[in-house]
Image (cartoon, rainbow, N blue to C red; front, side, top):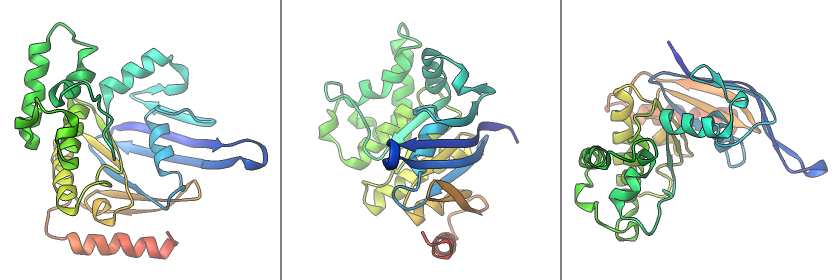
Length: 252
C-alpha cells in the first residue's frame, strides 16, 4: 500500500535548559493512502505535536518527514506551503475562519490562491460540498450566525476544496454535542471511504472507535496500537470497549 506520509525518528522539544521537555521522543509512524487513523493519549503526550510535525505545520529537532516522496526539511517555505495546500486539509476543534467573510467565502478562500480567475467554478464546487454536508442554506451567513456543528461542517468543506490526499483533524468533535459529533464522524467516514486518508487527534473513545487504527501516545512516544476493520455501523459498543480497555491497560 502506498504511503502518504512517513515520519522517522521524530524528536521535538520545548523549553530551554532544565525546563526543556521532549514532546516527541524518537517517534516513527507511517500513514497509508486511504487509511483512517486516530491518535489518543493524555494531555501533553505529544498527539497534536505529532500531527503538526507530520503535516509540516511545525518543525522538528531531528528525524525526517517524507510527504509525497519529498523530505520536508529539504524544501523551502513557499514549496512547503504549496504542498500542504495541495495535499492536505485541516480541521480543528475551533475552525479558524475570518469574521469579515461569510461562510461561502471562507470555504473558497484556500482554493483561490491557485485559481483566482475561476471564481465561478470554485464557488460551484464549494456549494456542492456544502450541499453534501447539509449547510447549503448558510452560504451568506456570518460565522457568528451558525452553530458549532454547522461551522465544523463548513470547516470540512474548506478542507476538501483542493481534493487533499489526507485530512488532519485536531479534536474535530471536541467542542460539539454528541449528536453533532456523530454527524461529523459520519461525514469523515464517507470522505475516507472515497479514498482520502484521515488522521484524527482525539480524547474521545467513540471517535477513535470509528477509525481503522488507533495509536496510543504517552510521554512523547507511541506505546501501543489497536487495529480495526472498516466500521460497518453495527459494532460500535464493542469497538469503544476495546479502545477503553486498551487505554486502561497502558495507563492512559
